[in-house]
Length: 287
Image 1 (tube, one colour):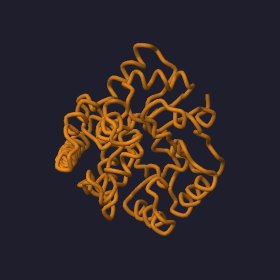
Image 2 (cartoon, rainbow, N blue to C red; image 1 turned 135 degrees about the vertical axis):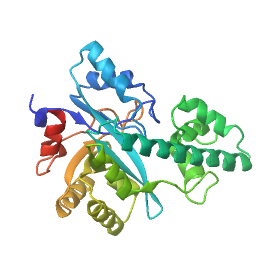
Image 3 (cartoon, one colour; image 1 turned 180 degrees about the horizontal axis):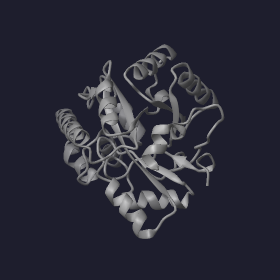
């Protein structure tokens, strides 16, 4: 099958970070959804990749797994996520970088717990840890615990009520720079992709600035097709990719089964995009 005829999803999460399916469960769902090529891109960890590869081999499944990671970065005090695709997960520089990232993530998570407890939300830290199941603790784990324990109606409302700037559980990010993340991804042999650009809710001016500075920092591609997206948003992201001479990528940002987002859902491949899998570097990585 030609890659342009494949169903591709290059952004999803497992229980190695804040997803709710184990790597084997994630692969099984992708196969059931007829996804041909998938990248597991857990937050600041590659721990789920060996299990996923092993499961594919043991079951002889008809799917290609791309080694990936999603790195949290700080850009002008905003959380910006950079996806690394076709990385070597055993690269020493990458391993050291991700170890530092997880330390920063754990420090931030502990501070969120302290602030919530001070505000009278008791047990949030231990509760979130129970949801993480050994993975690095994230705001997503807190959100699930708070929603399930009646502090908000749903996970989305938790962020508005507790985690947004100025709220009880808000803690500024302490991540490293976009430039550092891109450099590490390149050292690991991969390509750097700006994740869900329109998801940051920036003004048009600030989004253009972000994409331009991502390119100047050495970025390779941006996600132009997202799991939930209007046609106007897709057209705007494609235009930004052309204006900045960036390749296009796509991904559902799947975390758990639901009605709106699923593996491979809405992963169309519009014409006129210089897709990342058409690059010589991609082809040499998966040859």
